[in-house]
Length: 107
Image (cartoon, rainbow, N blue to C red; front, side, top):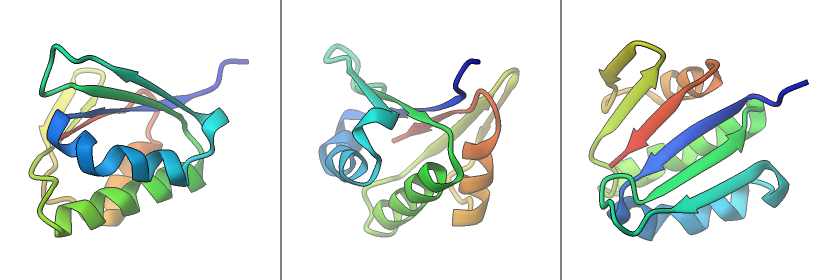
């Protein structure tokens, strides 16, 4: 059986403030982090096992850092769907993270 994962793509600026928090709240065995130093907009790619708890914690972290002014843009991709969700509520972010094959760009 294949484990479903949610993918986050963090810009370099967002990674600087948020990556350590995500590593602290998500169990190490549920998270993979890949760093691409050549791309500022997709500096860190995080693949996280898609559990309700993990998605809830990630949504909370995104909302906190957005309120602090470090997250300016959220772009949701799922299959052919691509949309700006920068104004999404915490529950909406959580719901998007729970959808299969979600990729969320956080800038």
